[in-house]
Amino acid sequence: MKLATRAIRTGHQRTAEGEHCEPIFATSSFVFESAAEAAARFSGEQPGNIYSRFTNPTVRAFEQRLAALEGGESCVATASGMAAILATCMGLLQAGDRILAARSLFGSTTMLFDKYLARFGIATDYVPLSDLDAWAAAIRPETKLLFAETPSNPLTEMVAIRPLSEIAHAQGCLLAIDNCFCTPALQRPLEHGADLVIHSATKYLDGQGRCVGGAVVGDAKRVGEEVFGVVRTAGPSLSPFNAWLFLKGLETLSLRMQAHAASAMLLAQWLDEHPAVARVYYPGLPDHPQHHLLANGPSAGPEAQQQTGGGIIAFEVASTHPSRAREAAWSVIDATQMLSITANLGDTKTTITHPATTTHGRLSPEARAAAGISEGLIRIAVGLEDVADIQADLARGLAPGPR
Ligand SMILES: Cc1ncc(COP(=O)(O)O)c(C=O)c1O
View 1 (spheres, rainbow, N blue to C red):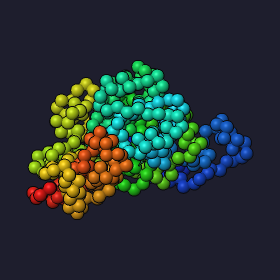
View 2: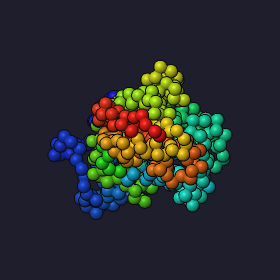
View 3: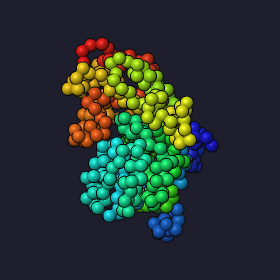
View 4: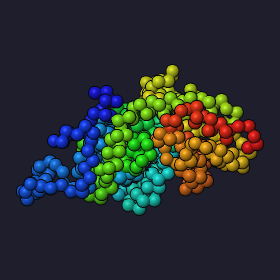
């Protein structure tokens, strides 16, 4: 089955009631016919439901659907994207191991690695995302996991997954890709050699800003046993209701991602030519440094891995002096009337945020500068409203005037 079909048809085991839409199994536990059956379920001799911390049919339907979309053997759903990253590290690493990660990571991921995993003896080294030589040079004997987001948030920098996976495997490491920005509709990292795919389902998988959740996809041993074991034991489990919302979200994923990307491309081109905009970061623009990794671009290379530029754009507002950059960016944000000023992304509603004082506000000014997050930078996650209305809302704040 093709991707759009799998997103709609995979995972639903119709019950005796004959329901057409996937049911929500709102139950914490499951009942057994006898003590012997209970014992067989608990011992693993007999497959079946036990308790919704680790076996729930609605959650399982979401896991099967997402595994089918990413092309993975196993998927484990979690209470949030951060819980997916935590469960992956807890399941696959131990004290003394090291993580090698891209410098441009989601802020909470960096915090999880540096503040919390470090306390348990798992240290993290960082390299520039797209610099493959730096990745290869930074692997130490203790390094067990390479971790990257591509494209990065908010600057949409990309790394070539295939060569990065070869670098990882040559040194006996695993490669995990956080596929939050692309979703399997645009990019399937396992097909390019990655071992694990991480999702904040909160974003495009739901697609309508309704709930928080996450998932890990990979092989049956690492994900189906090790990561599953952490979720079963420690309990960062997805609720059946949220799993149901994600099931419904996945059904429109392909169409939504096409529409997000088509509007983002138009807006990126418009912003790129706007006199009040100093720089635009969007993979679909031909001057993006990793434009060749886009499968639909004229310069698509053999390593092409991402179907389109996706739905996220970052841009720097021009200002007369660096000391006025924040004011210039804030005035564009505050001039919007329809866009939602919020740090979430992947919603039908377009969102706008100032990364330096929100998503990346907990970084030191030096770390922010090293990550390229300037005071004049704005990120928009392009929604599904009419693109003319999004453009008109942004145009108001970009109109000529002192900055
Ligand atoms: C790239 C990326 N990974 C992981 C997360 C964490 O996901 P959640 O908020 O669902 O825990 C986010 C959240 O914004 C994200 O943008």
